[in-house]
Length: 632
Image (cartoon, rainbow, N blue to C red; front, side, top):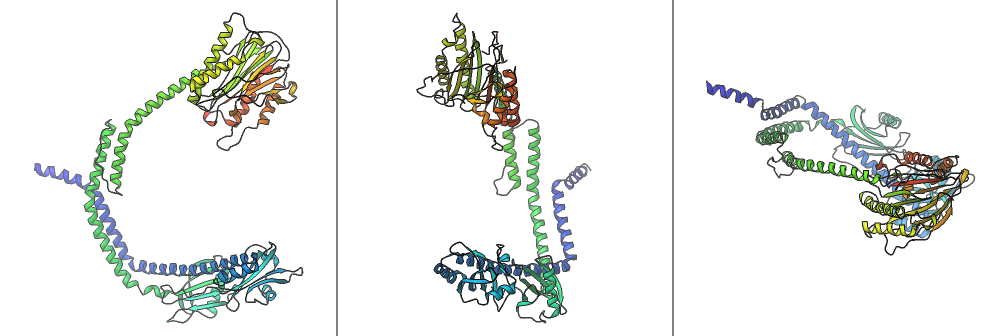
């Protein structure tokens, strides 16, 4: 009794196991399939054979129609080419190519003012009666000038084909080619068939018939069927028709010219001759498939389910945190379970690596956030506000860290302004800007600690440029470079001293919106290059109401998604209109500029290909003294 109680649960478990389910599914599917095949064998075999005749007949029609269309296209192309050649070359092309394509003659002509054709050249036999043939086909200069070759009705075993071309001088001409269509016998595998080539009137221009045991499909019934095919909206197809008391499978196709229709008829009774043989073959094939499939199922089901079970157990261990588990792999090509086992082992090995990479990525993102926070302190936090001058700017990085940099500092009654653009962007460029910012800050502190604040003319711009060049070399050696524009503005007089080292030329806006001009478009050498020396100074006086725009080249880079650039004319006009308003401050002009830039580029850093930085300095229309906030 205990033994029986142990056996019953084991048997019950096996009956509901995946092995038993697969075996039952395969055996049941095969039995059901063979039973339905046996019940419907006769109908299916007849339908299959008829379908074969349909396909075979249509394939033969399509093959011959393709040959005829290809021949017509070849004749048209060669005739047009021969007309453009010199007479001797045209004769050679006719003998070597057109004769082989079945062309007997080609006539080249033009239409006179009265509409009559005039032959200007002919190849091969004289086609003769050109005007009557064109009139018979209904062709004139307007129809032939459409560019598409026109194919006429079969005349004496030849087809006329006409189209426009050009003569050897390039002048417009027309040609009429006569050629024999390639109507070679196409018997295929059918013991009996009938081939008819008809014109649009339903008249048979060619008839071909294989040896037939029954009556040929001729007479009024056959002509009525052909006329129905011409009126059909389908240019090709297969259908059944009864002609002379016999059922035919009829395949038809119009040629590309729509001037000829090819019809092929095969008696339907040919489909029944092989039914008996096909029935026995189907039964034999079905029995073989059942035996082979069931045997293979029994052989493979154990191996299949064993691999699935191993994967199931291994998955449970992975869910518990054991990433060292592995399942046996097979190296047989095409084995899905073996590929699944390999993928599982690879997955288990990659999970721990991905967890480690995720932690490392999070740490790097945190470090980038810290670097971005630090770099933001390189830029002024507030605008420079003074009764005689207002100055503000903005930087838009292309990535988390930027290679653009700008700053200002007040030194007594002078404002120092600097803007630079390191080659490239990202972390490497940001390290260079950090070095440059440090050198700039040290220079400003040195000037402030000197005891007596230097006057406008005494501040050494060349010394500052040398220090910043040394900072670029110290940070990146000769592997990087930086464009730089530095300037000094006298708060009392508006005098302006500047140096431009490879940076974008500043734009000066006249007071009252009277236009703008470009200052010093050609700058000196970039910082960080061998043999660097400070360049020349540019002097200018900012008149009351004038505004100065400084920017980096990223402002006019093309967008990646559509290669569209920000309109420089539109941008400068917007800034001009803004600073033309009396009392406008630099921050207001920068806000106008920022709105235009963000509408073009978007606000996310990933939308931009390069860092974008710009600043606007506006000299007030009234001169006064006051205190401004320094950015460094």
